[in-house]
Image (cartoon, rainbow, N blue to C red):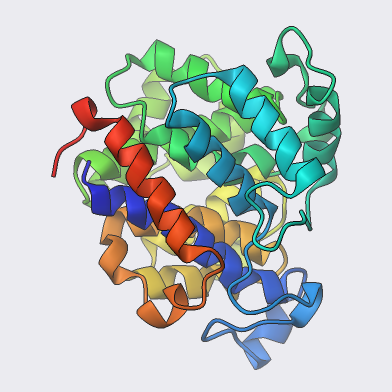
Length: 314
């Protein structure tokens, strides 16, 4: 892993998020007539250009917590501060946070002995909230065996989303990220993840929900079959499909945004992987120049990279 892969992942996530915020909930049909082609503002949430949502805010909380090591209590406290104090939000106040995430953070505020009990566990708690913020964890997993990787992904997801389906989505996503960090070659990373999932998660009763992803043939799926909802399975499919069917960072995130519906989250998730794959330099400067708190995000990424110094190179 290089510093520019890590920065590409974090800034790629935030930039994709900011591109999607103004058109969140707009339909695909609407966006076909008036597609997003650049960083704009206002729109649905009436925010300035470059504003990212709770997805990035909580991902940045995770990144900052990891600078001091793996500590669920510390991470939980940062999530609470983000919701109640506007910590690591673009303008000092959280907006657009999902219900499952918000309820879980309310529970985290009470400081449960085991913070992983805070996350929703029922079938209806399978939104994309934990998937949208899990990426920074991938930067810390390379030296761990598969069992320990699964445990940490499960724990971090479970702070807000503890259903096995959401946890599995996070595991699949971080496996793709790990392979891209080791070697930025997309097909190898994707197919390697598919093979890993079919072997390592064969007994997981939730795996069948991801059968199209792990088939290795997701890129051939017609756009009409790709759903851009907030359901975690749909979100992961859509984000990976955008990554697999485009050849640049810009193309990937714009395709994700213009799928419509949960545009900011899908673009954030796709943008994080695209940033790792194509690198920090591939994110258009005209977008970075408008990104809220860009300098602080870059400084945080640098801090995280340095904190992992023994595990990284270049």
